[in-house]
Amino acid sequence: MPENSKNSLSKRIDPSPGRGRLIILSAPSGAGKSTLCQALRRRFPELAYSVSHTTRIPRKGEENGKDYYFITEAEFKKNIQQGKWAEWAEVHGHFYGTDAVFLDTHLSAGRFILLDIDVAGARQILEKYPDSITIFVMPPSLDVLRQRLEKRGTDTPEVIAKRLENAKAEIAQKNIYRHVIVNDALPEAIKQLTAIIQRYLNGPKSDSRPRDVKGETD
Image (cartoon, rainbow, N blue to C red; front, side, top):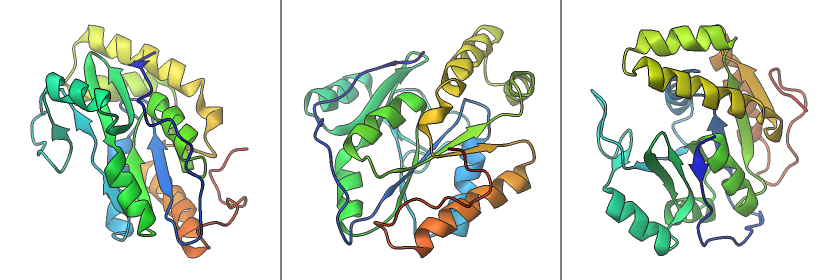
């Protein structure tokens, strides 16, 4: 499992009328989460998007402030000490974190916020924002996931093996999520994800979670 730790912002934040909600989207590495997030942002431009901070170096084509905020490890650890992360984790030797001020500012303004975070981060977020909308994206199988990671061509065999081990551990925790989608065919996965989000956006922010959306799990 990825190493993780809670920051000092441990207080629970309860929903109130007019307050926005968080949409947590998690998936094993290679399951298509980034592509699905991009599709959601095109379909629902009114969603705020929380850009994570990371200490890893940018991959080809990634832009600072768009894909991630790329910062030094020293700066990241300073922000841990100052309690500036709503959640943070160390994954594959790199730190990732979500800006707490960004979340609270947009939630107070009544906006829905999309978060692209891992299972460890989702657990931390749910302690502070228990009304979050949670969605887990599954690969069709671990064999398919392995093929996708190999096709990506960015990792060594050793890193791919580690990602697959992490995937098994994350999939084992899928029941903490309200909705589970299997990304077998991308257009169908986008359709299911869009339907879930649309139902929440259409209803009052404090309503109970919809129970009749395809792709949902109890």
